[in-house]
Structures are given as C-alpha cells and as structure tokens.
Image 1 (cartoon, rainbow, N blue to C red):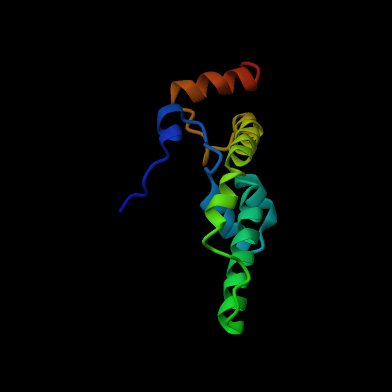
Image 2 (cartoon, rainbow, N blue to C red; image 1 turned 45 degrees about the horizontal axis):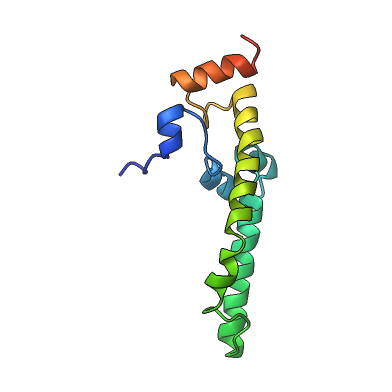
Length: 126
C-alpha cells in the first residue's frame, strides 16, 4: 500500500514542515543525528515529546496517581495552537530554502514546475 501523499508536496513539489519527519525520527532513534537534522530538525523535539509523554503515562500507571489532568489538557493546549502554527511557518521557510538550495531530492520534486522555478531562483539560475 502506497503512503498517503502530502498535499503541499503533490501540488508544489516542495516539502511541508513535516516532510522528512518519519525518516528523521527513524534516524534520531538510530542515533544518526546528522541525517535526522538534514531530513527534518523537528524530529528530535518530537521524539523528546513522545518519550516525555510515555514517561508520564508509565509513572501514572505504576504509581496509580494522576500527574496530569488529561480532561483539562485540550483546553490548555488550545492556547498554544496559534503559536505552534506560527512556529511551524517560521520553520517551514528555512526548511524549504535549504531543501531547494542543496537540493534535497528526497524532499523536493524538481520535476514539479513550482519547485523547479523556486530552485532556479534560490540557486541563482544554476
């Protein structure tokens, strides 16, 4: 079964903020920090967040004590959604620029006209 394609990548040939994330998480878990950062630097914080969440859940299950009020979590987390969206956009700009400048063929489809034009602009017509 083919993986579901990223809509932004399918339309533009450019990586979205999460493109390369799965491969970067795998590289992080294997200790290959260079590859992880190359593919998507957000993988390391994502792995840390997942480990922290698993640790909290493990402590709660072993101690039979609630550390986090899970019912209030969605309301509290909703305050951070605009900030996370803004940070995602701020991350996407250099992520895309670097993917076009190097280029990263595993993240950028240079056969797509949008990506090809942007690549020529970033690379100075090379």
